[in-house]
View 1: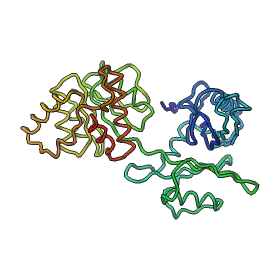
View 2: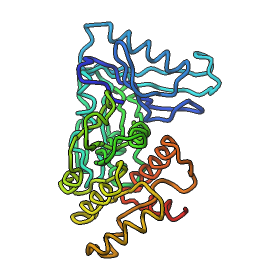
View 3: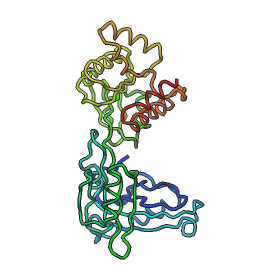
View 4: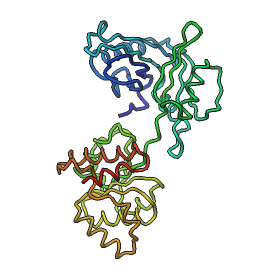
Length: 342
């Protein structure tokens, strides 16, 4: 869950470097506000110490926007953690909205994500780099690493480059990808469980149902609620590239939504139900003029075959795993392979 914009100033804590064993990998991050925090860098003594340090920074009104500090933590000697490694954390102070805006600047689903470069020097904004020809007054080691990551010569991963005696350190971090648009039809028990299971995953959810009363009173941050007496019309207007999950209270409504999706786009559409339900839907869709190639877009049953429980939470975990595989591949190949393993 992301912090709301009315939180004010916060501290983002990034695991900038890890040596040896540690609770989380480089790139893990959390955000700390005066009274709450979001995300995790692994819990335990390290996280408690980091939260305390972040709130001390927030208590100093004189700290400038984009204030940054690097702090090192030997986990065994200093914190008594059995991991025994060394972790370097980057603390960054700023308005809550600025972090997402900086990280997502220029991000698009149809192009590779860029890199966010931070100079560990207070008062300087993060820089997002997409082009290998980008130039800046940075140390050669920083420019070389950026170009190698963008060209594929080295993995895109969080990297701390020490400044030594000559200047400040730099942190290179992969830019988060734009979340995949997901339309979820149905706010019943399974729909609610799916929304909970997808929290923290790279999906922007539009949640559709026929009545306001069917939704929970409080929605997860980043979920948009749509009330429509005809969800198939909403499906027909969905942007290209949207994923669709259909799980309403009505088979007739499910069929109308699936038909609306298949009629206009090459979208991935998941339908809750059994192989028997799929066969019945395919028969009716063929009778309505849908070609075999269009029917291949329909995934039913949904989820991964090795998770067979029918409880809402079990279904939700299975579906979340399938969608996570889709998002990892970017084209749904692994989700298709998972379905074939049923």
